Image (cartoon, rainbow, N blue to C red; front, side, top):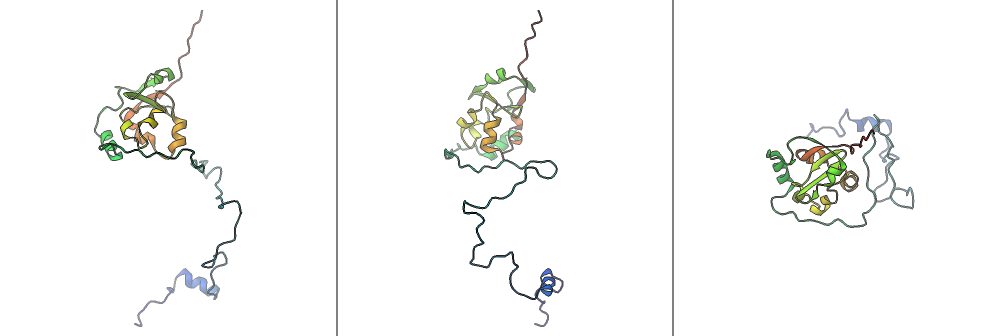
Length: 187
């Protein structure tokens, strides 16, 4: 029993700090057990300071602090339509794009694809054929169809900005948004 190690270890930070102050009291910034820290405000929980810009010029991700007016509806996916089934389908080599090559898509062309059997949507300038993804969407087909045939970037970012749609829908990429061509009637 004489071989038992000393506690705290001889070269530990605890032993070094205890030699500086021989008191066994907790540090002054600690709160004693059973006691609450003094309130910082009577208006609610303390807020964390988030810098407007992070080092390197990056901005922090958007945060959601507002409780949605409409509670989230749970959707039961049919068997064979789980996220893993979607991943398996995207790796299968099937043409989920519905086109043979990438296209330049105008807003008027995008509007033509807003049916359940032919649904395209634009997200941040990229156009995706989401027809195959409809039965796999955890929020239900009707939620995806809200953005079918148009630019769904704002809706998408308000709903679930944390989801990497670029990776999720990479096999559904049809092309890129371009502005409508201007009629050049030089008479």
